[in-house]
Structures are given as structure tokens and as C-alpha cells.
Length: 275
Image (cartoon, rainbow, N blue to C red; front, side, top):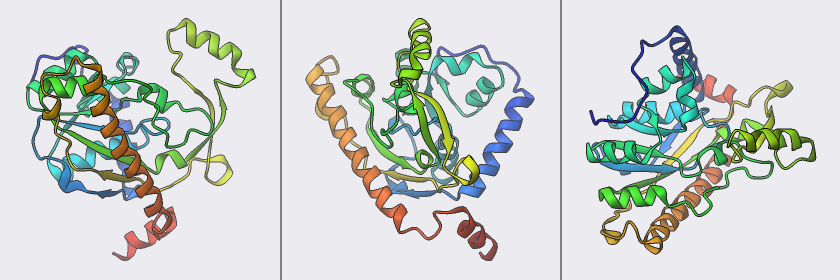
């Protein structure tokens, strides 16, 4: 295990146990579909890079669980530091393999031959504004490309669809009504937060039950940019190639979803009972 910058280990709390049970139940109901699993290496080091869906943790536990179950890979997620300040929640994330998303942690994990999960969009992509469904909100960020190039680790791009359809954003930070919230966000150093109020897309405003879909692309070697991790052009080339693969994957999954006869919950339940 590499020496990483993480919170002091503490016993898993009952809160974490309850959350894990809830995640397992949700997973069984979702019956996720994963495409291109053969592209995910069975050993590291490599970096998984994908799109963060609205509210983040709707699909992440399923992704981590399925990669371990189907490929024998325990991915180490790079998490926002505020997650690790919440007892119970922090315990669950640590048990899932997550660590604070620092450059030092990422470099240590890749050097130790581990699989690292990165969402370049971060909190900005988790807390989207209205009309930004399935958009990659990376801006000009190239940090993940720098880390992968420095480590000589390939990047496996992946797309995720489904969780973003379970909620609709009713109010975001761009609204005139959100002026007080914008002031607070600036004060606490979180101007990247965009979502304020959401409504479930299901019956009576409950969260929708859309199936989760994941699509993994072929690994992208970073050796063409070897020795150029500090070169902005090299990092941008790498980033743009990864981004294009993810956007193509999102489009393919959204098209697949439209033809899936198990997209809704009831058909999935009937299929599970009959199989």
C-alpha cells in the first residue's frame, strides 16, 4: 500500500454500514449494463477517466463494485476533500478505496501500480446547472493528463449514462434567486457549485429509476507524450483525445438506452423474476 495523504484510519461506523446496505439494494434494482469491459486492464497502473454525473454518488458505487466483481480491479477514487470531513460518509469512501484527490496521492498510487479513478470535471460536473445534462465541464483542466504522462500510465476513458436522468435541476446558481447562495459559495471557496434545487424525474417528484450504463474505451497510451508532462500543448492534446472518446461514448450509450427494453424499473423486475 503506498504512503498516501489520507485521514487517520477509524473504525467503520454504523452509518457506513447502513449506507453500504442501501447501495447494495439500489445496485440490485438497477441491473447496470457495462460495455467494453475487456478494455479495462486487470492490473495497474492505469487511470480511469470519465464523466461525473449529476449528484455524483448515484452511479459511482455501482461502477466501483462492478469493476472489482467482473475484472478483479479495485479502483482508487480521487475524492474532493470535503467528503473526508463527514464521519460515516468518510468511512464508506475509505472502505471503497477512495482517497483525497491530491497530486501526491495520485502519484503515489500510480507508482504503486494501482488503478486510479479521476473525474476531471470535479464538483463543477457533479453540481450542474440547468441545461447541462451529460456535458463535460472540464474547462481547460489538464491535471489528470499531467499525472498520467508523468507516471507513463495508460488512460482508460469511460462514459456513464442513466443517473443524470433521475433528477431535474429546478434552481441553479445562475438564477436571480440564488444571489445569497452565490455569496456563500464564494465565501467558503466553492464557486464551482451550480445545483441548488433538484426534483426527481419519477412519480410524484421521486428520483427516477433509470438503468445505469457504462462504456469503456480502449486504453490510450501516454507514451507519445513521454517527458512532456510540463508541456501545456502535450497535456492539452492528451486531454482532448480522452474527452473526445468520452463524448462519443456518452452519445452511444444514450442511443443504446433508447432501444433498451429494460431501461425502466418494472421490466427489469419482471426479467429478474423470470430469469
